[in-house]
Length: 281
Image (cartoon, rainbow, N blue to C red; front, side, top):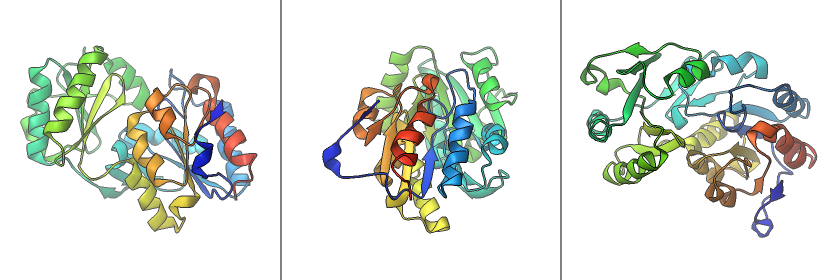
C-alpha cells in the first residue's frame, strides 16, 4: 500500500464517517463480504466513526449487506440517483429523463450492446441468456423480469445498463454516448463490463452532500473508498479519499491514499492504516 499526494495536506485525523463503494471495494471479486471487512466496520463504530455504503446497485441489491454490517444510516443506490433508509424505503429518488432513456436504449441497441433497465424494484431485460446475467443474479440476489418492449418502462427508469464482455467497445460507447447525453444523463462505467446511464446532476458525490445535510457531518470529516471512475465524484466531495489496489491508475492518482485490492481485504487494511491507526476522531 502507498499514500498519494502527501503535498495535498489532507488527513484522516478528523474522520467521523466512512462512505464505501461496494463492488470492487467492500466485497471480493466473487461478491463475498469477508469477516475482516465486517470486523473493520465494527471497529469503526467502536471508535465512534459512522459507516454506510453507496453503490451502482439497485436498492434491493444492497439488502444482503444491511444485517452483516449493521447499516443504519442512509444508503446510496444507482450511483447516487436514489437514497434509501436502512430498511430500503426510498428517501430520495431521481429518474432518467424519458427522452434520454429512449436515446440511450436506441444507441446501445444499434451497437449490439445488451441492455438492462432498473425500474422500482424490478430488473428488466430482453435477453435472459445475455452476458453477465448470471453474475448479476448472484450479485443482487434477485431474478430479472423479461420484457419484449422497452417503451412502457422508459418513463420510470432509475438506471439503464449497457452490458458487454467487449470492454473496448463499451469504453467507446461511454465516450460517445456520454458526449451526446451530456447534461441529460450521467454515462459512466461502474465496472469494465457495465455502462451505467443514471439521472443527470446526481452521482456518488451527491451521497456525500446528502449525508452532510442529514447527519450534520461536514464533508471534510467524511472518508470515502472506491475503485472505479464513478467513485471520483465522492472522492472530490469528501475530506479524505482512498482508492483500492485494483482500481485503474487514474482512480488511484485521484485519491489521497491507495490500499491493497478487494481480494486482499484492502478495505479492512485501509480502515486500519488510514482511519483507525490515525485516530479517526
